[in-house]
Length: 557
Image (tube, rainbow, N blue to C red; front, side, top):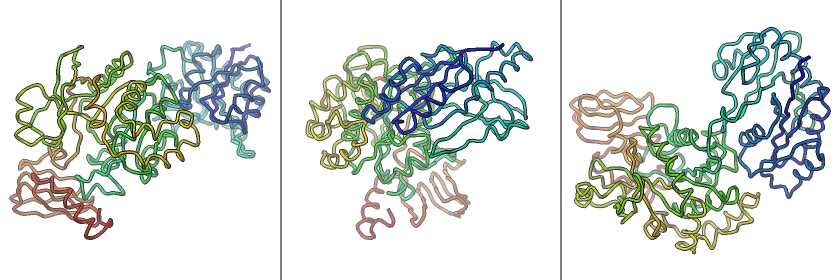
Protein backbone atom coordinates (compact mmCIF):
# COMPACT_ATOMS: atom_id res chain seq x y z
CA UNK A 1 0.00 0.00 0.00
CA UNK A 2 1.34 3.42 -0.98
CA UNK A 3 2.13 5.26 2.28
CA UNK A 4 4.50 8.23 1.73
CA UNK A 5 5.21 10.87 4.35
CA UNK A 6 3.16 13.99 3.53
CA UNK A 7 4.16 17.39 4.90
CA UNK A 8 1.30 19.82 5.53
CA UNK A 9 2.70 23.32 5.63
CA UNK A 10 0.77 26.21 7.14
CA UNK A 11 2.33 29.64 6.41
CA UNK A 12 0.80 32.21 8.73
CA UNK A 13 0.93 35.96 9.26
CA UNK A 14 -1.14 37.50 12.09
CA UNK A 15 -3.35 34.41 12.08
CA UNK A 16 -4.59 34.17 15.64
CA UNK A 17 -8.19 34.35 14.43
CA UNK A 18 -8.29 30.97 12.58
CA UNK A 19 -4.96 29.21 13.15
CA UNK A 20 -6.34 26.87 15.84
CA UNK A 21 -8.99 25.51 13.52
CA UNK A 22 -6.54 25.19 10.65
CA UNK A 23 -4.00 23.17 12.65
CA UNK A 24 -6.76 21.01 14.12
CA UNK A 25 -8.06 20.16 10.65
CA UNK A 26 -4.53 19.01 9.70
CA UNK A 27 -4.17 16.91 12.85
CA UNK A 28 -7.56 15.27 12.26
CA UNK A 29 -6.62 13.79 8.86
CA UNK A 30 -7.57 10.16 8.40
CA UNK A 31 -4.20 9.66 6.72
CA UNK A 32 -1.73 9.45 9.60
CA UNK A 33 1.72 9.47 7.96
CA UNK A 34 1.98 13.23 8.04
CA UNK A 35 4.08 15.98 9.53
CA UNK A 36 2.75 19.49 10.09
CA UNK A 37 4.97 22.54 9.76
CA UNK A 38 3.78 25.99 10.77
CA UNK A 39 5.90 28.88 9.49
CA UNK A 40 5.28 32.20 11.21
CA UNK A 41 6.09 34.84 8.59
CA UNK A 42 6.98 37.69 10.99
CA UNK A 43 3.59 38.21 12.63
CA UNK A 44 3.10 41.54 14.43
CA UNK A 45 0.23 40.60 16.75
CA UNK A 46 2.19 40.68 20.03
CA UNK A 47 2.96 36.97 19.98
CA UNK A 48 -0.62 35.73 19.69
CA UNK A 49 0.05 33.67 16.55
CA UNK A 50 3.19 32.16 18.05
CA UNK A 51 1.37 31.33 21.31
CA UNK A 52 -1.24 29.30 19.41
CA UNK A 53 1.36 27.40 17.39
CA UNK A 54 3.51 26.59 20.43
CA UNK A 55 0.47 25.28 22.32
CA UNK A 56 0.51 22.18 20.08
CA UNK A 57 3.93 21.14 21.37
CA UNK A 58 5.61 18.32 19.44
CA UNK A 59 2.44 17.59 17.43
CA UNK A 60 3.73 20.12 14.91
CA UNK A 61 7.04 21.66 13.85
CA UNK A 62 7.15 25.41 14.32
CA UNK A 63 9.48 27.94 12.69
CA UNK A 64 9.54 31.72 12.84
CA UNK A 65 11.14 34.11 10.35
CA UNK A 66 11.16 37.82 9.46
CA UNK A 67 8.29 38.84 7.23
CA UNK A 68 9.02 38.00 3.62
CA UNK A 69 5.76 36.86 2.08
CA UNK A 70 4.10 33.53 1.44
CA UNK A 71 6.66 32.29 -1.07
CA UNK A 72 9.56 32.77 1.33
CA UNK A 73 7.60 30.92 4.04
CA UNK A 74 6.97 28.05 1.63
CA UNK A 75 10.64 27.91 0.73
CA UNK A 76 11.58 27.69 4.40
CA UNK A 77 9.14 24.80 4.71
CA UNK A 78 10.74 23.03 1.74
CA UNK A 79 14.10 23.42 3.44
CA UNK A 80 12.83 21.97 6.75
CA UNK A 81 10.37 19.31 5.59
CA UNK A 82 10.98 15.55 5.70
CA UNK A 83 7.99 14.53 3.62
CA UNK A 84 8.00 13.20 0.09
CA UNK A 85 4.91 15.21 -0.71
CA UNK A 86 3.89 18.73 0.22
CA UNK A 87 0.33 19.90 0.92
CA UNK A 88 -0.18 23.66 1.44
CA UNK A 89 -2.87 24.72 3.92
CA UNK A 90 -3.51 28.44 4.36
CA UNK A 91 -3.94 29.48 7.98
CA UNK A 92 -7.51 30.67 7.35
CA UNK A 93 -8.54 27.45 5.54
CA UNK A 94 -9.64 24.02 6.75
CA UNK A 95 -9.06 20.55 5.32
CA UNK A 96 -11.77 17.90 5.17
CA UNK A 97 -10.65 14.91 7.30
CA UNK A 98 -10.16 12.66 4.25
CA UNK A 99 -8.39 15.20 2.01
CA UNK A 100 -4.83 13.87 2.22
CA UNK A 101 -5.91 10.21 2.29
CA UNK A 102 -7.84 10.58 -0.95
CA UNK A 103 -4.99 12.42 -2.62
CA UNK A 104 -2.41 9.82 -1.61
CA UNK A 105 -4.71 6.99 -2.77
CA UNK A 106 -5.16 8.70 -6.10
CA UNK A 107 -1.39 9.19 -6.52
CA UNK A 108 -0.77 5.56 -5.51
CA UNK A 109 -3.11 4.30 -8.23
CA UNK A 110 -1.50 6.67 -10.70
CA UNK A 111 2.00 5.35 -9.92
CA UNK A 112 0.81 1.76 -10.37
CA UNK A 113 -0.31 2.64 -13.90
CA UNK A 114 2.76 4.73 -14.72
CA UNK A 115 5.79 3.82 -12.53
CA UNK A 116 8.02 6.29 -14.45
CA UNK A 117 6.27 9.15 -12.65
CA UNK A 118 7.98 8.06 -9.45
CA UNK A 119 11.09 9.93 -10.60
CA UNK A 120 9.26 13.13 -11.48
CA UNK A 121 9.07 16.21 -9.27
CA UNK A 122 6.32 18.76 -9.36
CA UNK A 123 2.60 19.16 -8.91
CA UNK A 124 -0.08 16.74 -9.97
CA UNK A 125 -3.16 18.46 -11.35
CA UNK A 126 -6.14 16.15 -11.34
CA UNK A 127 -9.05 16.59 -13.72
CA UNK A 128 -9.55 19.31 -16.29
CA UNK A 129 -7.11 22.22 -16.32
CA UNK A 130 -7.51 23.25 -19.95
CA UNK A 131 -8.16 26.90 -19.04
CA UNK A 132 -4.91 27.09 -17.10
CA UNK A 133 -2.75 24.84 -19.21
CA UNK A 134 -0.98 27.39 -21.35
CA UNK A 135 0.21 29.27 -18.29
CA UNK A 136 1.24 26.44 -16.02
CA UNK A 137 1.60 23.01 -17.50
CA UNK A 138 1.08 22.43 -21.20
CA UNK A 139 -2.07 20.91 -22.61
CA UNK A 140 -4.34 18.81 -20.47
CA UNK A 141 -7.80 17.43 -20.97
CA UNK A 142 -10.30 16.12 -18.49
CA UNK A 143 -8.96 13.31 -16.37
CA UNK A 144 -5.31 13.69 -17.42
CA UNK A 145 -2.41 14.11 -15.05
CA UNK A 146 0.20 16.78 -15.60
CA UNK A 147 3.54 17.25 -13.85
CA UNK A 148 4.72 20.84 -13.63
CA UNK A 149 8.40 21.03 -12.77
CA UNK A 150 8.46 24.83 -12.45
CA UNK A 151 5.77 25.27 -9.84
CA UNK A 152 7.96 26.16 -6.89
CA UNK A 153 10.07 29.27 -7.26
CA UNK A 154 11.64 31.59 -4.78
CA UNK A 155 9.33 34.42 -5.64
CA UNK A 156 6.06 33.03 -6.87
CA UNK A 157 3.25 31.29 -5.09
CA UNK A 158 1.76 27.94 -6.07
CA UNK A 159 -1.35 27.73 -8.26
CA UNK A 160 -4.05 25.22 -7.32
CA UNK A 161 -6.42 23.76 -9.87
CA UNK A 162 -9.60 22.23 -8.47
CA UNK A 163 -10.45 18.72 -9.61
CA UNK A 164 -13.63 18.61 -11.66
CA UNK A 165 -13.43 15.01 -12.78
CA UNK A 166 -16.85 13.47 -13.42
CA UNK A 167 -18.61 12.36 -10.30
CA UNK A 168 -16.57 14.28 -7.71
CA UNK A 169 -17.52 17.91 -8.35
CA UNK A 170 -19.33 18.15 -5.05
CA UNK A 171 -16.26 17.11 -3.10
CA UNK A 172 -14.17 19.86 -4.51
CA UNK A 173 -16.29 22.90 -3.95
CA UNK A 174 -14.88 25.44 -1.52
CA UNK A 175 -17.21 25.97 1.38
CA UNK A 176 -17.02 29.04 3.60
CA UNK A 177 -17.91 29.34 7.21
CA UNK A 178 -17.30 32.60 9.10
CA UNK A 179 -14.85 33.64 6.48
CA UNK A 180 -12.98 30.33 6.62
CA UNK A 181 -12.57 28.39 3.40
CA UNK A 182 -13.23 24.67 3.84
CA UNK A 183 -11.06 23.07 1.19
CA UNK A 184 -11.41 19.74 -0.54
CA UNK A 185 -9.00 20.24 -3.40
CA UNK A 186 -7.36 17.42 -5.28
CA UNK A 187 -3.89 18.86 -5.50
CA UNK A 188 -0.74 17.44 -4.01
CA UNK A 189 2.87 18.36 -4.78
CA UNK A 190 6.07 16.35 -4.58
CA UNK A 191 8.75 18.20 -2.64
CA UNK A 192 11.62 19.79 -4.53
CA UNK A 193 15.23 19.41 -3.61
CA UNK A 194 16.95 22.65 -2.79
CA UNK A 195 18.97 22.72 -5.98
CA UNK A 196 15.72 23.05 -7.92
CA UNK A 197 14.93 26.38 -6.27
CA UNK A 198 16.46 29.50 -7.82
CA UNK A 199 19.29 30.73 -5.62
CA UNK A 200 18.00 34.18 -4.80
CA UNK A 201 19.75 35.89 -1.90
CA UNK A 202 17.12 36.49 0.77
CA UNK A 203 19.25 39.34 2.17
CA UNK A 204 18.89 41.35 -1.04
CA UNK A 205 16.22 44.04 -1.25
CA UNK A 206 15.16 46.55 -3.87
CA UNK A 207 13.65 50.00 -3.29
CA UNK A 208 11.93 51.44 -6.36
CA UNK A 209 11.37 55.18 -6.15
CA UNK A 210 8.14 56.00 -7.93
CA UNK A 211 6.84 59.27 -6.53
CA UNK A 212 7.99 61.80 -9.11
CA UNK A 213 5.77 63.83 -11.43
CA UNK A 214 7.94 63.77 -14.55
CA UNK A 215 7.02 67.29 -15.61
CA UNK A 216 9.50 67.27 -18.52
CA UNK A 217 7.16 64.78 -20.23
CA UNK A 218 4.19 67.12 -20.00
CA UNK A 219 1.47 67.03 -21.24
CA UNK A 220 1.52 63.19 -21.32
CA UNK A 221 2.92 63.00 -17.80
CA UNK A 222 0.49 64.68 -15.39
CA UNK A 223 0.28 65.22 -11.68
CA UNK A 224 -2.40 62.50 -11.44
CA UNK A 225 -0.73 60.11 -13.93
CA UNK A 226 3.03 60.68 -14.05
CA UNK A 227 5.39 59.08 -16.54
CA UNK A 228 6.34 56.02 -14.47
CA UNK A 229 2.77 54.76 -14.90
CA UNK A 230 2.73 55.27 -18.68
CA UNK A 231 3.41 52.77 -21.45
CA UNK A 232 5.56 54.82 -23.82
CA UNK A 233 6.54 51.98 -26.15
CA UNK A 234 3.25 50.16 -26.58
CA UNK A 235 4.48 47.01 -24.82
CA UNK A 236 1.52 46.72 -22.48
CA UNK A 237 3.76 47.47 -19.47
CA UNK A 238 4.44 50.85 -17.89
CA UNK A 239 7.93 52.00 -16.91
CA UNK A 240 7.14 51.06 -13.29
CA UNK A 241 5.98 47.58 -14.30
CA UNK A 242 9.07 47.09 -16.46
CA UNK A 243 11.29 48.09 -13.54
CA UNK A 244 9.52 45.67 -11.20
CA UNK A 245 9.67 42.86 -13.78
CA UNK A 246 13.40 43.46 -14.20
CA UNK A 247 14.36 43.32 -10.53
CA UNK A 248 12.07 40.40 -9.72
CA UNK A 249 14.47 38.19 -11.71
CA UNK A 250 17.26 38.66 -9.15
CA UNK A 251 15.49 39.94 -5.99
CA UNK A 252 12.86 37.93 -4.08
CA UNK A 253 9.53 39.51 -5.02
CA UNK A 254 8.59 39.87 -1.38
CA UNK A 255 11.79 41.94 -0.85
CA UNK A 256 10.85 44.60 -3.42
CA UNK A 257 9.46 47.86 -2.01
CA UNK A 258 7.97 50.80 -3.87
CA UNK A 259 8.15 54.27 -2.36
CA UNK A 260 5.65 56.65 -3.89
CA UNK A 261 3.36 59.51 -3.05
CA UNK A 262 0.17 58.46 -1.31
CA UNK A 263 -1.93 59.87 -4.17
CA UNK A 264 -0.51 57.09 -6.38
CA UNK A 265 -1.44 54.20 -4.08
CA UNK A 266 -4.30 53.02 -6.29
CA UNK A 267 -2.18 53.29 -9.44
CA UNK A 268 0.56 51.11 -7.95
CA UNK A 269 -1.94 48.50 -6.76
CA UNK A 270 -3.66 48.51 -10.14
CA UNK A 271 -0.44 48.02 -12.07
CA UNK A 272 1.23 45.66 -9.58
CA UNK A 273 -1.62 43.77 -7.90
CA UNK A 274 0.77 41.08 -6.66
CA UNK A 275 2.39 43.51 -4.22
CA UNK A 276 1.20 43.51 -0.63
CA UNK A 277 0.18 46.75 1.07
CA UNK A 278 3.21 46.56 3.36
CA UNK A 279 5.50 46.59 0.30
CA UNK A 280 4.18 49.99 -0.80
CA UNK A 281 5.52 52.90 1.27
CA UNK A 282 3.28 55.93 0.79
CA UNK A 283 4.86 59.35 1.32
CA UNK A 284 2.50 61.97 2.77
CA UNK A 285 4.49 64.69 0.98
CA UNK A 286 7.26 65.02 -1.62
CA UNK A 287 10.62 65.55 0.06
CA UNK A 288 13.09 64.42 -2.64
CA UNK A 289 15.06 61.19 -2.46
CA UNK A 290 16.95 61.38 0.86
CA UNK A 291 13.95 61.22 3.25
CA UNK A 292 12.28 58.39 1.34
CA UNK A 293 15.51 56.38 1.25
CA UNK A 294 16.02 56.91 4.99
CA UNK A 295 12.45 55.75 5.65
CA UNK A 296 12.82 52.69 3.42
CA UNK A 297 16.14 51.83 5.07
CA UNK A 298 14.71 51.91 8.59
CA UNK A 299 11.78 49.83 7.35
CA UNK A 300 14.04 47.21 5.80
CA UNK A 301 16.34 47.16 8.83
CA UNK A 302 13.36 46.12 10.95
CA UNK A 303 12.72 43.22 8.56
CA UNK A 304 16.33 42.17 8.06
CA UNK A 305 19.26 43.92 9.77
CA UNK A 306 21.66 42.26 7.29
CA UNK A 307 19.89 43.53 4.19
CA UNK A 308 21.71 44.64 1.06
CA UNK A 309 19.72 47.23 -0.85
CA UNK A 310 19.59 48.44 -4.44
CA UNK A 311 17.77 51.75 -4.88
CA UNK A 312 16.41 52.38 -8.36
CA UNK A 313 14.25 55.00 -10.06
CA UNK A 314 11.03 53.67 -11.56
CA UNK A 315 11.42 55.30 -14.97
CA UNK A 316 14.68 53.98 -16.39
CA UNK A 317 14.97 52.07 -19.63
CA UNK A 318 17.44 49.19 -19.83
CA UNK A 319 18.16 47.72 -23.27
CA UNK A 320 20.76 45.12 -22.21
CA UNK A 321 18.94 43.54 -19.31
CA UNK A 322 21.22 40.56 -18.74
CA UNK A 323 24.30 42.78 -18.42
CA UNK A 324 22.39 45.13 -16.13
CA UNK A 325 21.20 42.40 -13.77
CA UNK A 326 24.68 40.93 -13.64
CA UNK A 327 26.04 44.34 -12.62
CA UNK A 328 23.43 44.66 -9.87
CA UNK A 329 24.18 41.20 -8.47
CA UNK A 330 27.91 41.92 -8.42
CA UNK A 331 27.30 45.28 -6.78
CA UNK A 332 25.13 43.80 -4.03
CA UNK A 333 27.79 41.17 -3.32
CA UNK A 334 30.37 43.96 -3.19
CA UNK A 335 28.54 46.08 -0.58
CA UNK A 336 27.60 43.04 1.50
CA UNK A 337 31.20 42.65 2.64
CA UNK A 338 32.36 46.22 3.28
CA UNK A 339 31.11 49.60 4.49
CA UNK A 340 30.72 51.08 1.01
CA UNK A 341 28.18 53.19 -0.82
CA UNK A 342 28.11 52.16 -4.46
CA UNK A 343 26.59 53.81 -7.52
CA UNK A 344 26.53 52.73 -11.16
CA UNK A 345 28.32 54.90 -13.69
CA UNK A 346 27.53 54.88 -17.41
CA UNK A 347 30.14 55.64 -20.05
CA UNK A 348 28.88 58.75 -21.89
CA UNK A 349 28.49 58.66 -25.67
CA UNK A 350 27.67 62.36 -26.03
CA UNK A 351 28.00 65.60 -24.02
CA UNK A 352 24.59 65.32 -22.33
CA UNK A 353 23.54 68.30 -20.18
CA UNK A 354 20.56 66.55 -18.61
CA UNK A 355 22.60 64.04 -16.56
CA UNK A 356 24.87 64.34 -13.54
CA UNK A 357 28.51 63.27 -13.89
CA UNK A 358 30.86 61.22 -11.71
CA UNK A 359 34.62 61.68 -11.87
CA UNK A 360 36.53 58.52 -11.07
CA UNK A 361 39.72 58.26 -8.99
CA UNK A 362 41.87 55.20 -8.25
CA UNK A 363 40.66 51.71 -9.15
CA UNK A 364 40.05 49.45 -6.13
CA UNK A 365 38.64 46.35 -7.80
CA UNK A 366 37.68 45.02 -11.20
CA UNK A 367 35.58 47.73 -12.85
CA UNK A 368 35.16 49.57 -9.53
CA UNK A 369 36.65 52.98 -8.69
CA UNK A 370 36.77 55.45 -5.84
CA UNK A 371 34.63 58.49 -6.61
CA UNK A 372 36.53 61.78 -6.88
CA UNK A 373 33.77 64.30 -7.62
CA UNK A 374 30.09 64.62 -8.50
CA UNK A 375 28.87 67.33 -10.89
CA UNK A 376 25.19 68.05 -11.43
CA UNK A 377 23.93 68.71 -15.00
CA UNK A 378 26.76 70.84 -16.45
CA UNK A 379 26.55 73.39 -19.24
CA UNK A 380 27.24 72.06 -22.74
CA UNK A 381 30.85 73.25 -22.97
CA UNK A 382 31.74 71.67 -19.63
CA UNK A 383 29.94 68.45 -20.61
CA UNK A 384 32.14 68.31 -23.75
CA UNK A 385 35.27 68.63 -21.59
CA UNK A 386 34.00 65.81 -19.31
CA UNK A 387 33.39 63.43 -22.20
CA UNK A 388 36.75 64.16 -23.85
CA UNK A 389 38.68 63.61 -20.62
CA UNK A 390 37.62 59.99 -20.22
CA UNK A 391 37.44 60.44 -16.42
CA UNK A 392 33.74 61.26 -16.17
CA UNK A 393 30.74 58.96 -16.31
CA UNK A 394 27.03 59.60 -16.21
CA UNK A 395 25.43 59.22 -12.79
CA UNK A 396 22.70 56.61 -13.29
CA UNK A 397 20.89 57.35 -10.03
CA UNK A 398 21.17 53.65 -9.12
CA UNK A 399 22.65 52.99 -5.68
CA UNK A 400 23.66 49.90 -3.71
CA UNK A 401 24.62 49.53 -0.06
CA UNK A 402 24.15 47.46 3.03
CA UNK A 403 21.42 48.76 5.32
CA UNK A 404 23.97 49.31 8.09
CA UNK A 405 26.17 51.40 5.78
CA UNK A 406 23.47 53.74 4.50
CA UNK A 407 21.98 54.33 7.95
CA UNK A 408 25.43 55.01 9.38
CA UNK A 409 26.04 57.55 6.62
CA UNK A 410 22.65 59.27 6.85
CA UNK A 411 22.74 59.45 10.64
CA UNK A 412 26.12 61.21 10.34
CA UNK A 413 25.40 63.47 7.36
CA UNK A 414 21.64 64.01 7.56
CA UNK A 415 20.85 64.08 11.31
CA UNK A 416 17.99 66.53 10.74
CA UNK A 417 16.22 63.74 8.81
CA UNK A 418 17.27 60.66 10.77
CA UNK A 419 16.47 62.31 14.13
CA UNK A 420 12.88 62.69 12.93
CA UNK A 421 12.52 59.22 11.42
CA UNK A 422 14.62 56.98 13.67
CA UNK A 423 12.25 54.93 15.82
CA UNK A 424 13.36 51.32 15.74
CA UNK A 425 10.34 49.83 17.47
CA UNK A 426 7.78 51.39 15.12
CA UNK A 427 8.91 49.97 11.77
CA UNK A 428 7.24 46.86 10.50
CA UNK A 429 4.26 47.44 12.79
CA UNK A 430 0.73 48.72 12.07
CA UNK A 431 1.75 52.02 13.69
CA UNK A 432 4.44 52.79 11.11
CA UNK A 433 2.24 54.72 8.65
CA UNK A 434 0.81 57.01 11.34
CA UNK A 435 4.35 57.72 12.58
CA UNK A 436 5.51 58.59 9.05
CA UNK A 437 2.47 60.78 8.41
CA UNK A 438 3.33 62.76 11.52
CA UNK A 439 7.09 63.17 11.02
CA UNK A 440 7.89 62.82 7.31
CA UNK A 441 6.58 66.22 6.23
CA UNK A 442 9.00 67.93 8.65
CA UNK A 443 12.01 66.38 6.87
CA UNK A 444 14.34 68.52 4.78
CA UNK A 445 13.81 68.45 1.01
CA UNK A 446 17.16 67.08 -0.15
CA UNK A 447 18.44 64.50 -2.63
CA UNK A 448 20.51 61.51 -1.55
CA UNK A 449 23.14 62.61 -4.07
CA UNK A 450 23.64 66.03 -2.45
CA UNK A 451 22.98 64.95 1.13
CA UNK A 452 25.14 61.82 1.26
CA UNK A 453 26.93 60.74 -1.93
CA UNK A 454 28.72 64.04 -2.50
CA UNK A 455 29.87 64.25 1.12
CA UNK A 456 30.65 60.71 2.26
CA UNK A 457 34.21 59.38 2.07
CA UNK A 458 33.27 55.76 1.27
CA UNK A 459 31.58 56.31 -2.11
CA UNK A 460 32.51 54.11 -5.08
CA UNK A 461 31.32 53.66 -8.63
CA UNK A 462 30.95 50.52 -10.70
CA UNK A 463 31.11 51.16 -14.44
CA UNK A 464 28.60 49.58 -16.77
CA UNK A 465 27.34 49.50 -20.33
CA UNK A 466 23.85 48.06 -20.55
CA UNK A 467 21.86 50.35 -22.82
CA UNK A 468 20.78 52.69 -20.04
CA UNK A 469 18.55 55.74 -20.31
CA UNK A 470 16.78 57.59 -17.55
CA UNK A 471 14.07 58.52 -20.06
CA UNK A 472 13.90 61.95 -18.50
CA UNK A 473 12.97 64.04 -21.54
CA UNK A 474 11.17 63.97 -24.85
CA UNK A 475 14.61 64.18 -26.43
CA UNK A 476 15.76 60.94 -24.77
CA UNK A 477 12.55 59.25 -25.93
CA UNK A 478 13.19 60.52 -29.46
CA UNK A 479 16.72 59.09 -29.43
CA UNK A 480 15.44 55.65 -28.39
CA UNK A 481 12.45 55.44 -30.74
CA UNK A 482 12.15 54.08 -34.26
CA UNK A 483 12.27 56.80 -36.91
CA UNK A 484 11.05 57.13 -40.47
CA UNK A 485 13.36 58.02 -43.38
CA UNK A 486 13.08 61.70 -42.52
CA UNK A 487 13.95 61.20 -38.87
CA UNK A 488 10.40 61.59 -37.56
CA UNK A 489 9.08 59.67 -34.56
CA UNK A 490 5.34 58.98 -34.30
CA UNK A 491 3.96 57.54 -31.05
CA UNK A 492 0.56 55.92 -30.44
CA UNK A 493 -1.60 57.93 -32.86
CA UNK A 494 -1.48 58.13 -36.66
CA UNK A 495 0.37 60.76 -38.69
CA UNK A 496 0.48 61.94 -42.29
CA UNK A 497 3.64 64.00 -42.70
CA UNK A 498 4.66 66.19 -45.64
CA UNK A 499 7.99 67.98 -45.90
CA UNK A 500 8.68 67.17 -42.23
CA UNK A 501 12.00 66.23 -40.66
CA UNK A 502 13.33 65.27 -37.21
CA UNK A 503 10.06 65.68 -35.32
CA UNK A 504 8.57 63.70 -32.44
CA UNK A 505 4.79 63.45 -32.46
CA UNK A 506 2.86 61.85 -29.61
CA UNK A 507 -0.91 61.58 -29.95
CA UNK A 508 -3.74 59.74 -28.23
CA UNK A 509 -4.60 56.39 -29.77
CA UNK A 510 -7.08 56.75 -32.60
CA UNK A 511 -6.14 60.37 -33.37
CA UNK A 512 -4.72 61.48 -36.73
CA UNK A 513 -2.39 64.44 -37.24
CA UNK A 514 -1.72 65.83 -40.72
CA UNK A 515 1.40 68.03 -40.63
CA UNK A 516 3.17 69.88 -43.44
CA UNK A 517 6.50 71.72 -43.34
CA UNK A 518 7.58 71.12 -39.74
CA UNK A 519 11.24 70.55 -38.87
CA UNK A 520 12.68 69.71 -35.43
CA UNK A 521 9.49 70.06 -33.41
CA UNK A 522 7.77 68.28 -30.54
CA UNK A 523 4.02 67.84 -31.00
CA UNK A 524 2.38 66.18 -28.00
CA UNK A 525 -1.31 65.92 -27.17
CA UNK A 526 -2.84 64.34 -24.09
CA UNK A 527 -6.33 64.81 -22.73
CA UNK A 528 -7.02 68.56 -22.68
CA UNK A 529 -3.55 69.84 -23.63
CA UNK A 530 -1.75 70.21 -26.96
CA UNK A 531 1.94 71.19 -26.82
CA UNK A 532 3.93 72.37 -29.85
CA UNK A 533 7.49 73.57 -29.33
CA UNK A 534 11.00 73.25 -30.77
CA UNK A 535 12.43 69.84 -29.93
CA UNK A 536 15.84 71.19 -28.92
CA UNK A 537 14.27 73.72 -26.54
CA UNK A 538 12.40 71.21 -24.44
CA UNK A 539 14.04 72.53 -21.26
CA UNK A 540 11.39 75.23 -21.44
CA UNK A 541 8.64 72.68 -20.74
CA UNK A 542 9.00 73.12 -17.00
CA UNK A 543 8.38 76.84 -17.51
CA UNK A 544 5.27 76.05 -19.56
CA UNK A 545 4.01 73.80 -16.77
CA UNK A 546 4.67 76.36 -14.04
CA UNK A 547 3.06 79.17 -16.02
CA UNK A 548 0.01 77.03 -16.78
CA UNK A 549 -0.37 76.10 -13.13
CA UNK A 550 -0.13 79.75 -12.02
CA UNK A 551 -2.58 81.05 -14.61
CA UNK A 552 -5.02 78.15 -14.97
CA UNK A 553 -4.60 75.94 -11.89
CA UNK A 554 -4.08 72.17 -11.70
CA UNK A 555 -6.65 71.22 -14.34
CA UNK A 556 -4.05 71.20 -17.12
CA UNK A 557 -1.02 69.89 -15.23
